[in-house]
Length: 559
Image 1 (tube, rainbow, N blue to C red):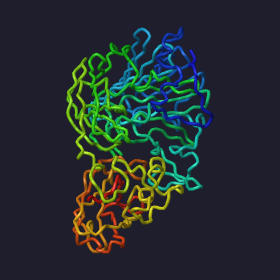
Image 2: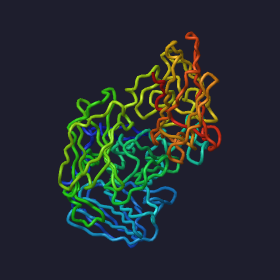
Image 3: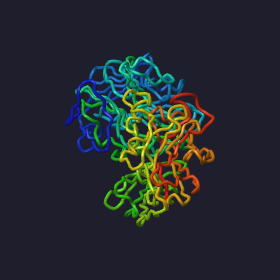
Image 4: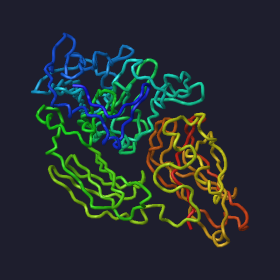
């Protein structure tokens, strides 16, 4: 049965799906389950299990290593490039592969040491459901990659390097002849921002619909590579654990289902989205680590007080075994998080991406834990502190600063970036837009902020605060006031040790540096500008945009 389409996209386009598209998604997946599928079934060609979904999709799984060796949709082969298959990580190697059919479901099970991986097909659907259970670190299984033949879905997007032959960083960041940059890292999106990734020609769509990421790490605002496209072929990823710019330890257990979905060009069905997908049909399949809906619980909060209504708020749950999150309702802060594994979790309320409240909540199987109104203490939001001046507002992101929007999908050297240098004048009205979102030791260290003080203000000591969202190579700010007072070099906070600022991510651990500036540091002439010079201190890093650096959230001088 072909999918019904209510949205088409043109040739040479790509799709990164968000929850906002759910209401207009094309019918596919579970909604096609009632179709007549006389050819549904499986066979053994000697090397592979061959599964015909009874719709328009036939796929093969290797009996020796569990690779997905073929994806034929409406007679066209989509799988593979460079002689490689679709698989966990770069392939598991020798594995035990078995197949079982239960009514209208076929399940292929792959066992490689302590790792178990599964493919499931449902009669009449153009979907492949996948689960991966990683029990420990003995197997390097951090992703599933769907490798797609070259030329089927062409594009020139941030995560495409088809037209970018010049390598400018490592082996994965490229520059086009026009100075724009491309990399598989440049997805633009946080985990919370998308439900599916993929491409469409207008008549065929190929997507990976992500899982709920309950066993992933990094929280709702984490960014990692999602997709790539080059002259050699394309790749769609479900990242189960990614170590780059990672803020949390790896979690273990069953992750999924995530879904490889074909459509007639429209978006995958919203019924496949992790928030909507029901898999009662898988309850009795014997999938290792599988927990049915009846074995899960729910958390609901009646509201959140003390919010700044100019910002979106997110509520997250996390412990060492699982993570979940949901948006708080803008009108009153109501939230609900379902499908939660039993256990005790740290509950965090985020203003934007800045944690402003933490608590604890216990979830039981089959139950709903109802929370009274959560009151955010005024002191927990740094924006509530009285300030003489403030550059940007505190929300845990560099949003609003110069080049901030571009940096989630481009390299700092990109021709579209405004100059990383230049001074800032408080009171000019351009303080935020003139201040660079990132500071590097070898690029723009020593940026100057000019500001005036009244006589009363200049007669007193003040606290200067600089908020950061991540750092590379232990880069942290050291300040000099009026070339007469120099702060100590602060200790570096805990931050990821990998690349971040050059691969599209500012998400690390939010940290606030405070500096107690004595009254003697200020100018007594109220008509003169005081100067604040912000340097990046670190003995690590290399040069240019890979020198020690940091991402800025906000800067203020308190009263």
